[in-house]
Length: 122
Image (cartoon, rainbow, N blue to C red; front, side, top):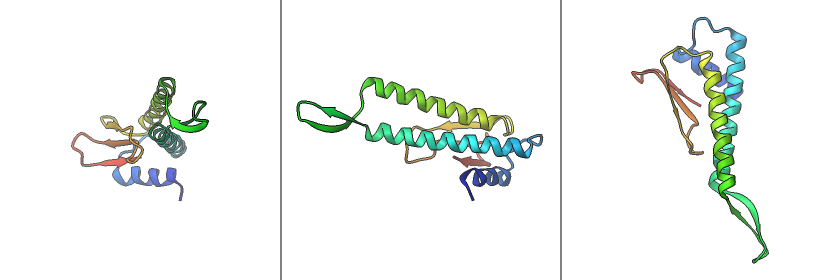
């Protein structure tokens, strides 16, 4: 069972899908959201670990980030978050809260209703 199928099952179990959402829309949105979550996780790990940079003085490779790297990573992480939110908003009921996180250890987003009685993580 793929991650997108697990997400679809969890959404159905929690009752967060709109009644008008069609099967192909739900499947496509779940695939987009899981791809965005995987991309976000890779970018968060890269931000944590750094990128290999050659140091001419010591003639070695170091793992670090420049300001341009950090700005690029932040921009790409924002694009991944927006892609997931857009995909999920098209199939979920209205009035849900989206809690996005930038840490690679936890989930990318936790979606819940106002009473926090129905929720799922991606």
